[in-house]
Amino acid sequence: METGTETFLSHLIELRDRLLRCLVVVGIAFIPAFIYSAEIYDFLARPVIASLPTGSKMIATGVISPFLIPMKIAMLAAFLAALPYVLYQVWAFVAPGLYAHEKKLVVPLIVSSTLLFFVGMAFCYYFVFGAVFEFINKFSPKSISPTPDIEAYFNFVIGMFLAFGIAFELPVVVVVLVLTGIVNTDQLREWRGYVIVGIFVVAAVVTPPDVVSQLSLAIPMCLLYEIGLLVARVVEKRRKAPEPVGRPAGE
Image (cartoon, rainbow, N blue to C red; front, side, top):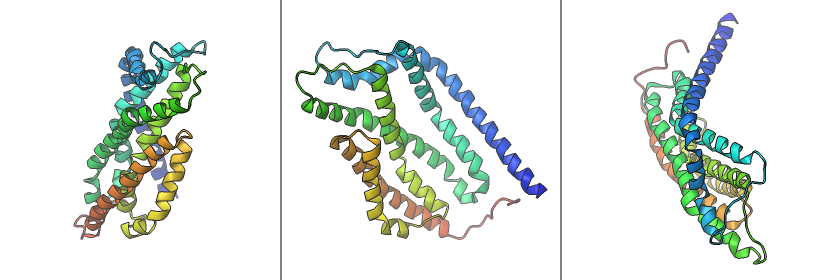
C-alpha cells in the first residue's frame, strides 16, 4: 500500500512539474503575442471584413472589449506557439509506460499532432470562413446592415479553430488507439459506418447551423479517418513484431 501510494504521489508531482513548465513557456510566449495582438486580430478579421460592404467595420459593444479581446488573442497565440512543447510534456509523462519501439513514435506523433492542428486551423481560415460568410450573406435580407461585434466574432473564430484543429487530430487518435491496444484496425473498419454517422453528428453540433460549415468539417474528418486507418495498419504490424526490449523495470 505504501509503495503504491508513493508511486501515485510521484506521478502527481511529475504531472505538476510538467504543467508548471507548460505554463511558464506559455507565459513567455504571451509577451510578444500581446505586443502584436492588434495585428493578429486584423489578420483574423480579414475573412469577415472581406464579406462586408466596402468601408464597413466591426464594432465593440462591450465597454472593456477593446482591451479584453487583445488579451484573449494573445493567450490563444501564446498557446499555439507553445503547443509543440505542451505536446512533448504530455508524451514525456506517458513515455515510461511504453515499449522501446513505441517510444520511437513519440517524436513523429508530436510533430504530426502539431502539424495537423495547424493544418485544421489553416483550412478553416482560408477555405471555410470565406464560404460560410458568403453563404450567410446570400440569405441575409437587404434591409440589414451587418456590423459584427468583435467579441462575438472572436468567440466564433476560436470555436471554429478549436473544432477544426481538434478534428484534424483524428488520424493521431486512431493511431494511438491502435498503438495502445485498445482497438485494432479490423474493429475500426467494422465500425466505419458508425464513425461516419458520429462524424456528421459532431460536425452538426460544433459548427454553425449551416450546411457549408458542417460539410466542410465532416468530409475532411471522414478522409482523415481513412488516413488514420492506413497509418494504424502499419503501426499494428510493427506492434505485433517480436519485441527485443521489454518494458522498463519497475512496472
